[in-house]
Every structure is written in structure tokens, then in C-alpha cells.
Length: 173
Image (cartoon, rainbow, N blue to C red):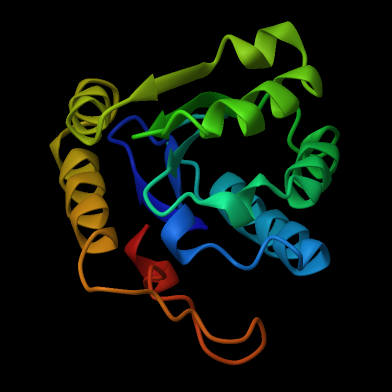
């Protein structure tokens, strides 16, 4: 979960891939990390933009992610400090089992927020970002989605210490 890039319009793009996601049982670490990432997304807005996009790459989604405690924690955390900051939430390559998580999360947010959600293939996600964010942002999304699918397995390590494999230096946004 990180700020990936900035659109030509100044909106930031936050990216999460389930393959590199922290173990769902570590709710406190996930919520704290999410708060830091979203704070960085807001601080990285430019050109008068006031909202960010969130891309949730469902590659690697599995039965362990059906533990929704972290989802509930994140949704509670964003209610006040990040109210009205979400422009779009895109779920990339969501498998059928993901519908359980989506239905649970949908019940915890307002209808206005639910309408900001969309489902897309990786190619559709890149096309959408190209349209709303420009070629540089689309290239960053395309490259990151491809990198998230490389290798045979993901070993993100402990919460404290090593960085997650999908993280890039903060100065790239």
C-alpha cells in the first residue's frame, strides 16, 4: 500500500496489491500503515487537486484475505480525516471470492462512496488512468501491475524492518 504516482491533474494514485499485503491478522499495523500512506497521498496533491485515486490490485487475493478485520479498521480510520478525499476506488482483476469482501465493505460506507468504486481488468485500469491521469501515470500503473505479477512467490517479511516488495522510494510520486 503506497502512493504510486501523481496524475497530470495533480491527483495522487495510491496502489495496493493483495500479493504484497500484510497478513490480515495484523490489524493495527495495516491501519497505521494505511493512515501514513493516505496522509502522504494528501500531502502529494498538486495543482489544486483535493482527491486521490486508490487502485486495489486483487492479484494474490486468497482465503486469508477473507479476514475482514483490517478492512473494517481502515474504513473507520478514513471516515473523518480523509472524508471526501477519494475520487475513485478501482478493483483490478477481482476474483469471484472478492465479492464477499466488497459486500462487507460496501455496507460500511455511504452510497456516495460506493458509487466511486469500479471494477477493471489490468488493461482497463491502465486505460482509465491514461484517460484521467495522463501517460506518465498510466505508465507507472502498467509497470507496477506487471512487476506485481513477477516471480513465483512473495515474501514480504516482518512488519517491522524490511520494506514490502511493492514499495518504491517516496520521491517517485
